[in-house]
Amino acid sequence: MTELVLKTGRQALRWVGIEWPANGWRMLVMAILAALALSGPEVREIVFTSISDAYLQVTVFVAATLALVYAFETAFRFDLGQAMARARYFQAPIASFLGALPGCGGAIIVVTQYTRGLVSFGSVVSVLIATMGDAAFLLIAREPMTGLTIMAMGFTIGSVSGWLVDWIHGTQFMRGGGGDEKAPACTDPVRREITANAPWTTRITNNIWLYLVAPGVVLGLFVATQANSDWLFGPLSGFEPTRWFGVLAGILCLVMWSSGKSEKAYMGQSGKDEGVLTLAERVIKDTNFVTSWVVLGFLTYELGTYLAGGGIESLLQVWAPFVPLMAILVGFIPGCGPQIVVTTLYLSGAIPLSAQFGNAIANDGDALFPAIALAPRAAFLATLYSAVPALLIGYAWFFLFE
Image (cartoon, rainbow, N blue to C red; front, side, top):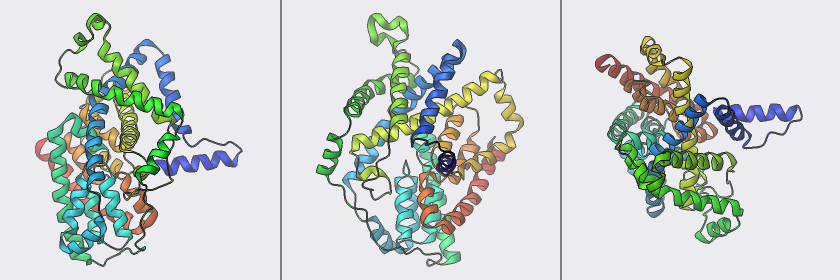
């Protein structure tokens, strides 16, 4: 939905003779952050603290998790669609397992196989219920037990829901069948050539980014355990070096995100651009995306608290019965950005766990984009089905435990 709005806006500007660059809205976000930083010392402190916290508490751990997940994908890639087609009655749990994995890759794979006619509509419902998208990286980094609990919950509910949908409608209901084409393979020599031909600024910033991650993980562990890490910097310990390390590294992530361009030459099996990018480049690109939305989430909460004079928690308590519903409605928005904001608000203590549960079940991440493009009726109906367990689980937890 976000991309649709931005595309419509670009077309409107083009109609009046203004050519809006492809990453113009990202540059606009950076301009707003700069304006906030220059607006006064108190707001500047909020901006810098949000960027530092986002990097040290989230970015470094997301980067490590992404590296493990993407390395696993690369090492064990095979024709999953054909394997799922042979699995028959186990399609729903397989789809739920892929959806429960952090990120959107598994969910996009299942949606793609549905359009090829290899899996049932119930499998699409299963994967959309189970997936939490890129917000899972954030939750696992900050609250691993909560993240694992939601993954297990999504897998269980997704599997049962998929079986029920296939039992009610049959495995041929709204069955896709768009052929069995595969994206062209992108070999390692091609990737190396693309990387070698990248602008020298991109190569330098990528290397700097990678060199900062290792010490960032060390500092992030200190922050996570609430231990003082400034002493590691020796004579500079009196200047809050850990905080400023997070600020500078976080700004680098934001600058790289705002100036980055999407590569579309070769598309991987998951429908994303991992086919053309090396593992390190995929980690950098996706981590920067998550970082940008985490910073937005932190700023949303901190600026809201600042402007409300610290009364935002009491305001949310007044509207508490509607908070899970609002989180579920946000979950219907395609893409991972809004869902990362919801998870950030939960981790900040602004919204309850029931809202996080409801959003995690309702949100479909980036998987909804190819579903809308390739099978809009199936995407709409599957989203409606995912709302049922989201409402039941979210409000059951709210009334029983909150």
